[in-house]
Amino acid sequence: MEPLTHEEILAMLKANRALGPEYDKVTAQQILDRMAAPSTSNAPDPPRPGKRRIRKSPIAYLVLSIPLLAIAGHYASSSGVFAVLALDAIIILADLMHPTNR
Image (cartoon, rainbow, N blue to C red; front, side, top):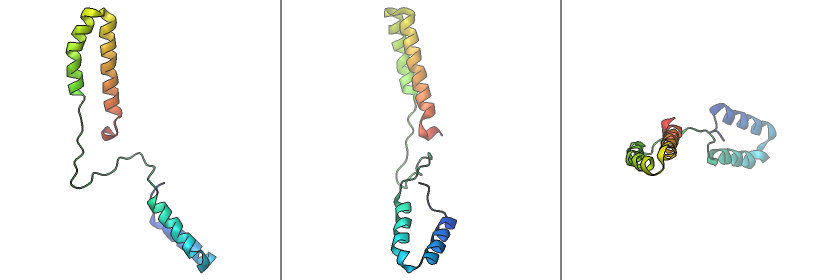
């Protein structure tokens, strides 16, 4: 759920006023439930003070693929080389799709 906006809170209070004081507890509970509900947006959480978000780079994995390419080329020929290159492509795509890159 998205966080409550000023207009939504005003609308809830106006509706509560029209319904009468017997609905005060229900309205208060609805507001608390909406405030406690997790957000459904895809945006990453803002960084908290004191904690830095460290972004890991795929470079280390790609550097490791260099000797792996040589080994795969020696033992498995072109199919091994293509398998290592496909793995590299998957690593790059996973890095691009990571939430910190959006």
